[in-house]
Image (cartoon, rainbow, N blue to C red; front, top):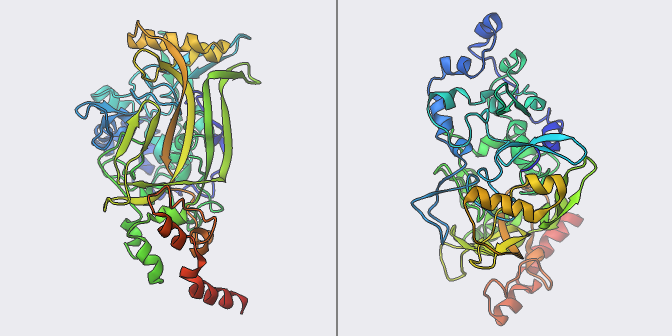
Length: 452
């Protein structure tokens, strides 16, 4: 979010990056060199247009499953304000920030945008299409250290890129590193936002050698996503576990019966991690001289997920972004979530969350100066900032496990994981559902088999 490049960019992903197959244009590039995006467009003339029309470029789209928003307008990182980031691309456009000691860095919410910043978020037309950094997503040899801002001769902030021949000759299907370079570092630091890492040790799909786009299979550079209370902008394409595993994925019919009311993730992604809370009203000075919001953070798999009914629609209030759903709703299933709490400034007059321009507090720790700068950018003149908390539910769909998936006794025993009373079950039902009697013989049989 704030730092241009996070530690995720430099984690050695070699074992997970997809090797590039022989590219049809390799011989031509070896002979004539790589001239940037135009070289790619010479063989893929529609690619630039496709990318600038995708959410990865626009950072916003129309959203039809979130309450309380204008469904005719577009929403996303471009203009949303919520307390994981407390800003957006407009307020926190990439800029040069100088610390009290004279150090400088180029920072902003749009530092992961695959353009050159001159052609920025939401830009259109031939110039935007030629600014797309194709190798960022398609080269297994991309040097992410080249992705840093600088000032050009006209004083404009420009995003650098790796346009080396080495990177160009390694193009192919996006690998894990190409995706995670941005997505693992979202929210201001490694693992902050989603709280997961995609490695053989932490995810069953990664252990099989799969990469992100094996599930998130793009269509004309539009990438499908699942439903997430806090992921609003989308390319209109959706994925689910059933796309590969069907509605009856188990040999055990007792398990298969559960899929009618339980999402696959409920049993197969029971752990989470990352930032659990962040305070934008209180920033702390870092060793490099810049200030950062105070953050409580956990390692991937360190914390338990939280469970709630979810039917794909989202409750959207100033202090709460959460899944909507109910036991009585046939479209609802129990899903696991990562719950995040963020403290920031709200407008006492309107009750709405105020944004923050990160440049002032990054330099001095003065958070109210950041609120004032953001208000000026947005044209807000009359406001009264007061501290407050916002709770956000994030879908918990990664860190998939088979060997450590929940079993009968994890839920159906005294002190089990699922909060049946909160999920709408009566005291009598809770008593029955939290008893080992329901699965005693079945679990005993498995126990005997393990002992044998």
